Structures are given as structure tokens and as C-alpha cells.
Image (cartoon, rainbow, N blue to C red; front, side):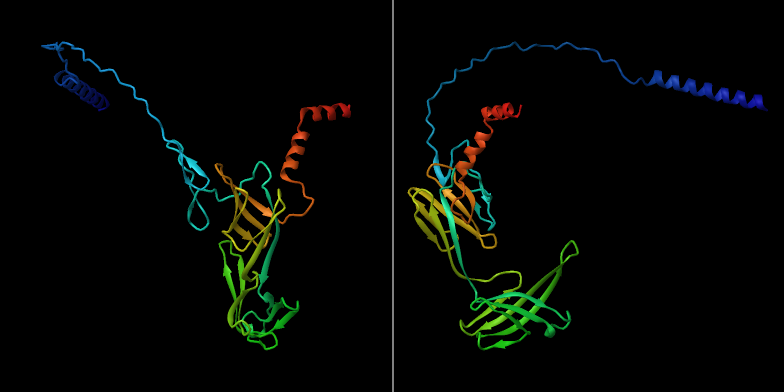
Length: 295
């Protein structure tokens, strides 16, 4: 029985081999292709190329497209988007100048509102009627402890509304914002105070001094400017908390320079002096003298 199975397997294998060889000879994979020479060859005929004629041209001079921005055909302008969403030709960041800026910031005179919300004390978070409101009177410097909906005729105001809002940010931290709404009978206005912000009146004075001529210049609000000879100094923004201003120096036929100025104290070393000292310290002769003195 075993020999019969072996013979049967050998017979099937031989039959498959014969069928495979027959299939290869009857249907070859690639057929030979006879190479045929072209019947006619087109003769090459040269083509005359005319010589290019050179023309002399003059490029127009670059025109001033915006104040402080010069560019031509091959130098496109650098356009930025400021915090207001407007397109400007000035970078929205402070650029440190190489030399002295030319002016000093002397004072930032603000006119605060006569009441400022200092804080509050909650006895019950869910019962705001038991909250004590801490209000600072700018006129006499007193700290007033008030209850919600209190009224003080001697100070000329009454509280209309008191709210404490709690928000949760992405980090699951709680942000607490307290709002105080009062009616000012002296100025006939409705005032909203926030505990973590100071409220100022519209009047503001920023005092500058020219480092060269010692002349005094006073600006009353952002986006105003003054001239020192042919150089324009523009006030871009004011930071009341840090007592700093963002100024832009516009020099004719030059790139604008933007710098953050803080309150100037007489006797401060200028940028030029600091630079000179730094260069003197890095001088190879100074380093060699220090090395020799050490040994």
C-alpha cells in the first residue's frame, strides 16, 4: 500500500513537470523583436540665431513708501501686525539702540479716580451680604470698610452692585474677580471698580527731557509725539504698573528705533558710558595687564 502511494505521488509530480515545461515552450515570456533600421533619415539643417542686442537702462531711485521704511524692487518691506491688528512697518517689540536714545523719561503723572477698590473679606462665600468691602479714598487717604449696598453721603457715593466672579482656567486654578458698581453723585457718573486694577481718569501727563538741550516736553496720552530738531519721538504705549513707556525714535532717512524707557534718575550712567566701559574691559591690553598682575 505504501509503495502504491509513493508511485502515485511520483507520477503526479512528473506530470506537473511535463505540463510546466510545455507551457513555457508554448507561451514564452518575451518574444524577440527584430530590429528595424529607419527607412529614411532627415538631414540636419542648422538654424541661424540672431545676436541679442544690449540696452542701457536706469533703475528708478527707491521711494519712501512709509515713514521710516525704504525699499526698492529687490528689497520688499517688512510688515508687522501690532497688538491692535493693524499692519505697520515697525517691529512690535523693543529694539535696543546702539547709542544714547536722546531723551529721558522724567514723570508719569496720572489722575487716579478718587476711590480705589482695595479688596474684600468674605464671611460666607454664598452670602455676599456678609462681605466687608475695603475701599480706599484717595482724597483723604482713609480706608473705608463698607457692606454691600452701603451709602455714604459725606463722600458723595452709594454702592449699586457688588459681585464676586470665580472662573476656572485650563490648569484648574480659580481666578477671583471682584466688581464694585457705585453711583458718584459729585460727578453724576456710574463707576465700575475692580479689586486687582487701578482706575484712572482720562487726564495723563508724560514728561520728557532732551538729553542734549535739557528742554522739557510734555505729552498727554499715547500716539502723540514731539520733535527734537529734525528727530521725531513718538509715544506708542504707557505701562502704568511698571512706570515705563514705549517710545519710537524716527530719524530721517534711517530705520526707526524703539526702546522702553523707565523713570530717569539723575546720575545714571548713559548707554554710551556703559558701552565704553564694556569695550575697555574686553580690551586685550587690559586682560594682559590683569594676567601679569595676578602672577
